[in-house]
Amino acid sequence: MNIRHTLKATTAALLVTGGAAFAQDDAMTGPNGEALAENQTFTYRVLDEFPSIDPNLIEDVEGSAIGRNLFEGLMSQNDKGEVVPGVATGYEVSEDGMTYTFTLREDATWSNGEPVTANDFVYSWQRAADPATASEYQWYMGLMAIENVDEVMAGDMEPSELGVTAVDDYTLEVKLTQPLPYFPQMVTHTTTFPVPQSVIEEFGDEWTQPGNMVGNGAYVLAERVPQEYITLTKNENYWDAENVYIEEVTALIINDENAALTRWEAGEFDQTDVPAGQFPRLSEEYPDEAISVPNLCTYYYNVNLTDKGLEALQDPNVRTALSMAIDRDVIVNNVTAGGQLPAYSLTHSGTADFEVPEIEMADMTQEERNTRAQELLAEAGYGPDGEPLEVEIIYNTSDAHRSIAVAIGQMWSQTLGIETSLGNQEWQTYLTTRGEKDYQGVARAGWCADYNEASSFLDIMQSDSGYNDSGFESAEYDELLAEARTAEDPLPLYQQAEEILVAEQPILPIYFYTTVFMLDSSIQGWPLENAQDNWYAKDLYRVAEGE
Image 1 (spheres, rainbow, N blue to C red):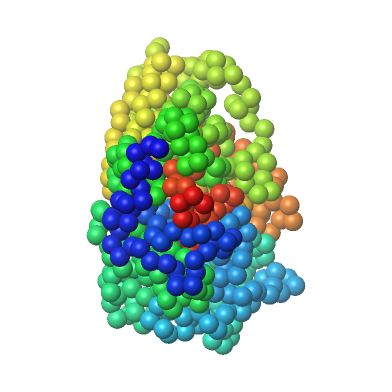
Image 2 (cartoon, rainbow, N blue to C red):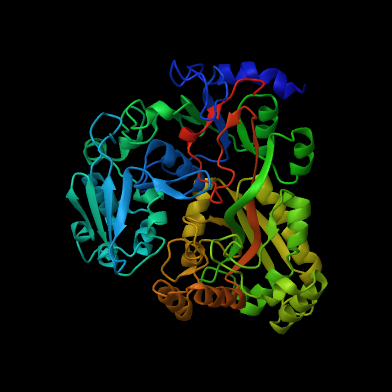
């Protein structure tokens, strides 16, 4: 027995205040008949402080996880990522695919006991689209193609004119400007979750503070210490509370991945990410707890194409040279080493109904890529026989991001004679820097699908996207995606859009993610087959030792 298994039974209970408790007195067994542990808490580690936990303002993956536990949308996802009822018990679609009518359950309540009604969704969606809210995810409302949404987002119409209506307390009608077959998937996203109007109007920006916040999810906000932790406790007013086993959820903010792993191995908490390169060792030492599963996310570098970017990087040949000189096999096999796959496209190869188009670069050997990269750089007038070039790589603080940047810097130096400098920033500062395109060279990024469809990746590179952090503009690209929204078969259009990105290289795709993490073997119910890794604490439970 290693130290983790010796200590975890005691330290986990001590770490989380108020921990040991059963979901309910008569729930001695889990959903599959397993004996439950006395301690029904779940504690996990995150890298950075959450920019926001307001559903309409959440913009990051970890914040979304908190949002899914504090709030519930019209629809949710099951352990396979399939859309299942949430607050809505179901929906009907008009024959032309332009009107969705959701029926809300009448037993859904806010954590203060007030009923959740269709008006709560109307208020939330109007708020998310309202430019006065300044949501970083306002653009997502535009992707939903709700009637009048573009005009509302531009400030040319009042939010009340958005095409979403409360027919009555438990019937919500949404009118679209075009059919979107994946619309039900889109309403599993936190931006679309309901928010309590009366609480927001009473507390303003302070409504997300403990003691003020009212949600409709399986948990309520109990404590929050910035840069340290956030704790949620079970919401006894949740409509399905009797089937919620975990009583308390805590996210520990630990910026150092290796320190986090050491603490996990000491049994201090249940889940943490695997630092780059350590999965092979950990999977041998902890075969039941080291997990690597595909995840619909792509890791890439943005290239700044605006006036703030380097002049050399405005040349697509230079950008293509940089991309070709990245040995992605070395990155995924020797640096990250967690089952990731080399990426040459933005859209993840595992995305539903999508096939990555033929990409010449992907079929070349690395030696061939390096040779072609040298030729392209020379043709552009840079490199050993041309103008010297130095490129800064910026990233948010993380050992993994730094390791990748160091490796890529060495590849560019050895293959192209390009010098690199590294710049790391704290997460929220980094989001601002990248979002305002206030960098000269390249900026790391990772994009995870908001819903399992290729447009969830490709839309971020549209000219007006809030997450187009390269400043890429292409009328042809925008038109392809607009056409894809109404196409019976959008795949050829998506592939053409990808081909534009390959030709222009506004981003340098590096790898397709896997979710690589350590999970205490007593925690069950993790959705390993949900390709978006959208987990809900209400579906987790801790089994007794020996189960």
